[in-house]
Each structure stands twice: as C-alpha cells, then as structure tokens.
Length: 463
Image (cartoon, rainbow, N blue to C red; front, side, top):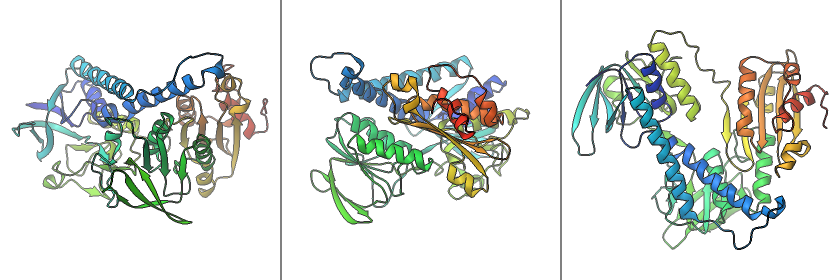
C-alpha cells in the first residue's frame, strides 16, 4: 500500500512516467479506472490510425487500375470489420503496456483515484470499495475528455464524441463533423473515404486552423476535390434531434443553412479531467481551467505533480510523455532540460497527411523576423509521383540573418514520418545551408526537405 511514486492515470503521460520512474529505481503504482493506456491508446491516437489505414486500403483498392492492378468484383467498405480491427489493434497495444508494467515491476491499481491527503491517494473500485495508498510523490495524469458545447449536447447516439465515432454499430449514411482540428479532420476524412456523406463545419477561416495558411488551404482544396462539403467561417447554432435525422442549423457569412444528417460528431476540442480528483481538498492551484505547474511539473503542493492534458501546453500524446519523463527525472535528482514547447511536432493523419513544427510564416513575421521561405512541391518529387501521391509540398522557414530554422510545414504522403528530421534539426540549431548540404537519399519523399531548404537560398536543383 506504500509507494515511492503513484501515478493517477495510465495514458501516454502516466504510463511513460511510471516506466521511467521504475527504471530510476522507484517503487511505482499506477491508478487507472478503465483500460491501461488511457484515451490515446484505447480511444484516440492508435485506433483512429487503424481506421484511417483501413480507409486508405479501400482507396488503393478502388484506384488499383491506376497502379496497373486489376481487381474484379465490387470493392466496398466493411465498416464492422474496420471497427473490429481498430479495437483489436488498441487491445493488443494495451496488453503490451501491461507487459511493460510487469517487466518493470509496476503495480496497476484498478479504480478511480483522487488525492485524499498529503501523500495519500484514495482509490474507489467499481464495487464502490475504497482503499488508501501512500506515496512520497503523486503524479496527476488524468487526461481529458471530449469538450461539450451548450448547443451541441452529446447524447452518444445522434450527437456523438470521438469515442462513439470509433465504435458506431453501423456506418452512417451522412454525418456533420463540427470542428476541423486534427480529430475532426481525421474523422471527416475517414468517414468520407468509406462512403459517408460528410459535411465539415469550421468556425475559423480555414480547416486545421493552427497550421500554416498555405497548408490549411491545400488540405481544404483536397477535401473539396474529393467531394467533401467543407464550410469555413461557419458555426453550428443548434441541432434538432427529434426526428429520424439531425437537423443542423449552420450560420455562415451568407446566412443560415439547415443540413440534415444521421449523426453529428462534435470535435470542438477537449476538456481537462480536473474535477473530483482532490485538487480543492489539498489546495492545488488551478489557473484558467488547468493545473498550474513549474518547469518540472511541480504544483504548489509539495509532493504533488501534474502532466499532460491537465496542464498548460499542447494536448498531444508525445508532449505528455516528454513531460512525464522530465518530471520523474527531476524527482530522481537528475538535471533534465525543461520541455521545449517551441519545438513540438504536430501531425494530422488525413489524406494527404499534415505535419509541422515551429513558427508558421505568419507568426514568424509577427515575431519580427526577417525570413527566407523555401517550398518544394511533391509534383517535382519522383518518389511522390511514383507512389501516386503528387499532392502536397514541404515548406521551410529560416531566419534570414542567422540561417536558423524557424518552422517546417508539410502536407503530402509520409510527412508525419518526415517531420522528426525537422524537430532534430531545430533542436540542434541547424542552418539552412547545413540542411542543403545534408545528403538525402534518392528517390525519397524526404528529398523535398533538402530541396525546400535549397529553394529558400535560390539553390534548388529540381525546380
């Protein structure tokens, strides 16, 4: 019942923090009310990528003739099989984390955990029985849930969140997706590609509004070219769910429009899980709806830490993992560098894919930089053309004075794998000319990085 470290929550922040703590010699317990791996592994990152891969396989099959492959008979989506595959993938990954817990002698405690007193966590199991556990260090990693809007009250059937979107009993014929961030765009892309009539509604002027404007406009054009209905500068005013279908009232600059759909997916962001975890009882400070922490995730209460979606910073799995590692290494007396929030990669797994790191062109200018911008289109990439993915580009932004890489923005095939190179380059403060002189293998899509850097300095070869 006594541990060195107790982690509440086993998502990519919690389970990574627990494993690193165990590696550093701590006795570790992890409290989890559902499945090991948290939302990301069970209901987010992993199963959504499985669904998207199924949709991609369907697209390849439909366009097999473009690659010189003949397929006879009807090619169609088996929605139930796609969902089952995604659940199997998530289940297998969860078992993998359980194996890592055993390997590192981490004890999994099933139940709902909350701070009870200094150094004490109370866990309530599904039968309502409560037990107390003590630890010198308690890490809160309780994650987040789908954000609810007053005019979009989720009922789990007609107005759904991301969890229901992954396990619908049957494929809907029509769907309105509200919000075009990573979650909304990915689900819109998936359902559209398997044959659902999708309308994507975004309040901001472009889809994926946090991305570079050129990237966002390219993705929007791609969606529209694929016959998806996209409405930007639009807001959902109300949803009438009384009939067989949902009647969605959408306000645009041109006026109001009513759209009928079987299902409405609310993808308007997430809300941190900070309620009923004992923050008030211990006096843990909260700021703007999130737990206030220092550079090493210490709260104002000694021995209590917080990481992931419940603290300020990007709500991304890899950010939570980095925060967890930094947190426990500091607890262990090491001297880790604080997480660099200016060098966090973001990925959206649509088709085409989107990835980015650092400043957009607009933000670089707003920050006062004189910049050099290099762009290389996939239409000039031999590998992209051979792969049948000529849509997209790589765009790099450099400080004109020192040659420092300020930002990288990509759209196209494989860019979610390519972005890591730019994160390393930015961390090591590689200059544009150093990147140009870094030999990239041919033919690869990653050559576009070298070519984009060369384009910024008027040295590009293949344009």
